[in-house]
Length: 199
Image 1 (cartoon, one colour):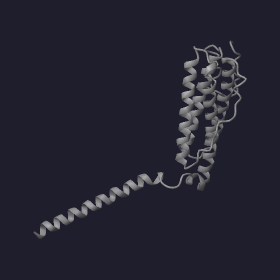
Image 2 (cartoon, rainbow, N blue to C red; image 1 turned 45 degrees about the vertical axis):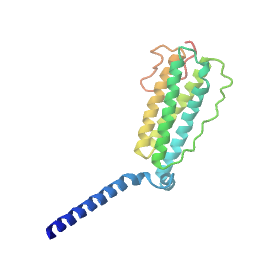
Image 3 (cartoon, rainbow, N blue to C red; image 1 turned 60 degrees about the vertical axis):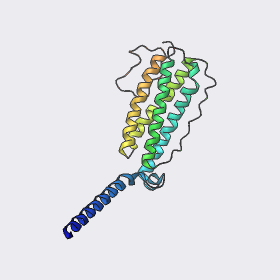
Image 4 (tube, one colour; image 1 turned 60 degrees about the horizontal axis):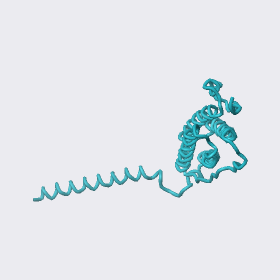
């Protein structure tokens, strides 16, 4: 009887120890996500700097998202599916940047920049404007990538630079460039002007 009680007591202690270890493991996993929103970026200068760069990037993506949304009626039937895909990409980029900001403990403060779309009268005019906005985003990511301190935002900036370079190729095609002219250089520089409409 005493032996059974002793064995039962040992089993209960082992069970409590396992439960305590499991609880501590869960705390370790959940702890990075706890705390006040924005605390990391507010108290860590490197994260704060990264959050500032990411908010600037988010403003550019929101501007492009707004442009692709509002000017979509100007797109002709042949380019409309491409326009929808570019818009969907912009939404994904905005979501990814927002997630990266949360990962830093930063606040999402960005808003779309004002772009006058009322004077656009044709697909070519809109694609030229979109090209300029995409080019600006591409150059901004090239500039931001080496200035970001944390790994995840730095990787995201590099991926977004590549994505906007792809968008520039699609827009060159939309503006009438041949397949060869749509990829003018081995390395995208951000300095290639949009092709003349219909070229």
